[in-house]
Image (cartoon, rainbow, N blue to C red; front, side, top):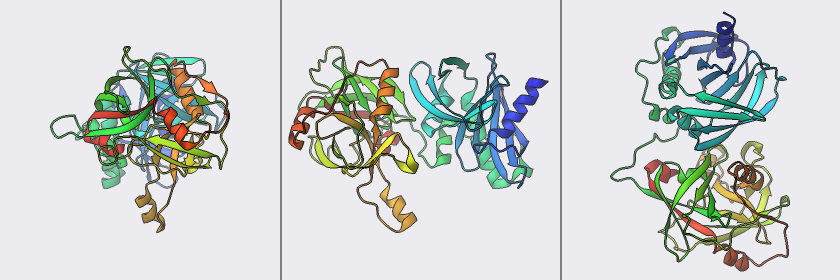
Length: 416
């Protein structure tokens, strides 16, 4: 009885703002051990979120939810937890021993940690069989039960309640879309399968070890059925995915054992500053522009990304589709970031009436080093030395900067 009451409380309070004033469930989500429904804010009566829980023998209850704004969350709850309110924790999750992500959770109540689940993680969660969650010294295994149907049911719940209201809530497992279609709820294109007419995409990567480990963005390799990489002027080689972190948009690839790399990127072992000059190298618009890589220069405009995200640098060096996953260097030729994208100019222009210029982003080396450490990669660091001219930096990078070719889905092409 105590466990049942705790599960009910977890369902009520999983909303991302941690409100204790929720009422429900309205309607039902009941599939494969997951139980839940729709919930309202008890103070306003407005629809708040749809959630479902599943208890585990390890004493932890998983709570999955999607709120009225379409944001997904994953919560870890237990009556044995005793967190301080608003305490934060990083939770590393690994799915089926392959795909990895880091979730940033907050304790809105003492017995629960709640984290936003990026859409890429939601997709992986719904198709995986096993999830291993690591937080500090704690390691927990979760046999994922019917996650595909429960994600579809929760997405259906949010759609139906927003359209029809809480008073018409019913069985949300009926008429639920197939799991792949849930991506459309947050404005992303639905996943498609490789086949006739599927497009190919391109990105950039760079070697970080003599053993042939290659770093790129997760969104470069997502949805690819075949990956190849080649240095400028050299034959392409088949690459395999070693690990991926969708939350930090990083992926680690492995070159064939027959490939040898005498040169590779070395990570700057000193923090970069706002105003420092940087050099970005990559393969933008491959097939439309030059087949060689391009070189652009700029400065570090800010030490944080969108909404003060401290994992990213804002840079003024111009980047385009195809630059994703490429190296960002300081003026000594040391790696200071991984290029990840540019601000959506059309979206900002629609919202503000002004077109932004030279606002691009790179993942900081702190997040990269954590990712490589977790993947047990023998990368090297270096102190900044004497400054080099831009052509010298580009010349050195030629030996380890790769064009990454993806054969896969149209969805993967659209994101690069």
